[in-house]
Image (cartoon, rainbow, N blue to C red):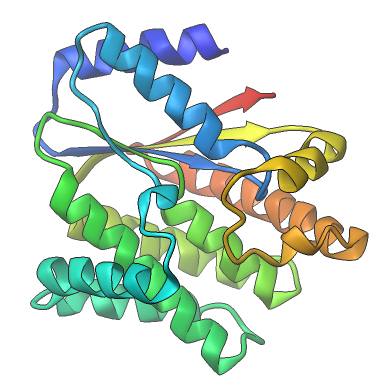
Length: 238
């Protein structure tokens, strides 16, 4: 599957696009999304192809400076884009049972992803994200503590369609990085940059909740892929 993905990606890079092409990794925290994207980016650039790469791990380690850097990026990219701000709010408030501070954090994270896509992707030059739109949706699903119902799925399809139009996306490719629970637990234990995920506690009930959120989101992603021609799903097993 990896060679198939790389062949497809190289062909897409050569052909170019009239709009933005976004390739984003998706999966349970600890599965190795950043590791996979680092390797994919290296192999693509070895073939003399241009691919912008944005990793969530590349921000400053100091929490205060990291927040300032992210706010600066959002301000430069989205301060006139009230449609994107509205979209982030509508996505987050479409999930029930989230605490107020969690909603603010998730809205901020979506605006950051939108800003990165706005700033770093150009027509004909795809961008690779180790955490993107659907990883943000994973967080919403995780904190909701419940499955995605038919009404939420329908609303999500509509919001993704509107978001693709607002960001001028020609193609959104979701690379689902999957692995066994054992691999994920090992990844959480050994990853260099821990982030703020609750799964870092290694409590089995929290990890189980994370895996459940992934399963629910994969069902939702299949639903979106079926209904929207500009969204593609590729699975890579580790």
